[in-house]
Each structure stands twice: as C-alpha cells, then as structure tokens.
Image 1 (cartoon, helix red, strand yellow):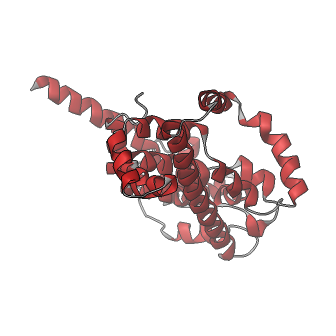
Image 2 (cartoon, rainbow, N blue to C red):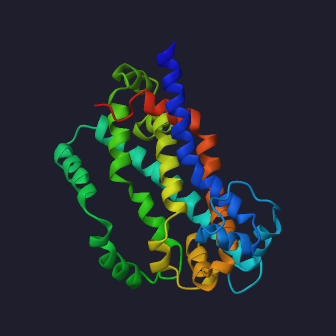
Image 3 (cartoon, helix red, strand yellow):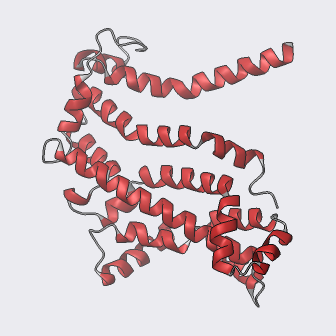
Length: 284
C-alpha cells in the first residue's frame, strides 16, 4: 500500500513539474502588460493565478499577427493545418507501405537496402539542407508547400523501421489466407496491415504532427512570403516585432494558441498511442 502511494506521489509531482510551465504561460498571457512584465522580470514573484484575467489578450495577439489584422493569423493557421495534414498522411502511408515491403517481400538485396535505409537516420538534417534547397529551387518549388510536403511521401526511416518490426510479428497465416481470397500485395497492405498497425500509426501520426506543426527551420527556408508562412514562422515574426517586455503577455498568448492543437491531438490519440508503446511496437 505504501509503495503504491509513493508511486502515485511521484507521478503527481512529475506531472506537476511538466505542467507548471504551461500553467505559468497561461497565467502570464492573461495578465495586464504591467503585471506580465513584472512576472517576467521576477519583481512580483511567480505568477500562478491572474488577478484580473484579460481574455482580450488572445484576440489582440491574433489581430497583431502578420501585416493584415486577423487575416495574418488565419492564413498562418490554415497553412499550418494544410501542411501538417498532408505530411502526416504522407508519412503514415509511405512508411507503412515501405515497412510492409521490407517485412513481407523477399527480394535480392532487401537486407542491404534495409541497412542503408537505417543508416540514413544517422545523417543530420544540416547535411542535406543545402542540396535539397538547390534541388527544390531547380524545380521551382520555392515559396510553396511542396518542399515541405513531397518528402513525406517517400517515407521516414524511423517509422519505416517501426512498421517493419510490427508487421514482421503478424502471423504469416493471416497473409496466406488473404492471398487465398485473391488479395494482392497492395490490397493486403491496405485492408489488413494498415488496420492491424493502428498503434504504430498513432505513434507515427502524433510524432509527425507535433514535429511538423512546430517545425520552424524548413518553413523559414522555403516559404518567403507572409501569405504562405506557417504559425511557427508567424510566431517568430511576431516575436521580432513585439518582443519587448511590454508585449510579453501577447507573446505568451500567441505561443499558447499555437500549442493547443498539439495538446488536443495527443489527448485524442492518447489511448491508441499508449497501447502501441505498451505492446512494444519497436520490439524485434
């Protein structure tokens, strides 16, 4: 009994430690400019609860985003949604398809190709940044979402590895029964493997969503106009324009708004996400 109580206590303390920065950000975003500045400088101590919540700070922050009131935030939000949805769909589909091929198809050189694919995980993004930019510039894709979306449809090495390990554990008898029923490779992947890989797909979708939604470097490199900017780029422009202590409450409000979709998507996929981790999706 004491052991369980200690475990719950440690879990509560850990959750409070991780949730405190988010709570503090929310509290500062609802403060007046003077109290928010005092909270940042530490002259008023740690702000836990706003004395007079200023809910208009969120509307003000969205209105000041971009060169056009309101529409700057809406454009950045819509751009982020479009890019993130396309990247998540492309990563899940392509990674599961390639993982299925490595797990179930037997062809010459498959093991070598799999090792080469794993080796690409050791390449930092900075190595391919300039060659990819030159390539996409030759294609005429600069200042469009194509450089952000198209690479996702060629798979992700880490997620391919996850899918491959998970699919390899599926009984071969199930695949043989599907072949007896007349299903081909693509039909087996679409109708059997993808539904069975739901825990892995949840992990892939959650991590891809968070990484794409918060990605700042790639949109900064390829998207040059304000109309095509994502939320991460718009938030950086807002910080450069309203980065003073007198506007820190607006910066906190806009930062919190950009975090809400990531929190919601994790809550929505939490059950399937935890199920995939518990079942050992990368267990070989």
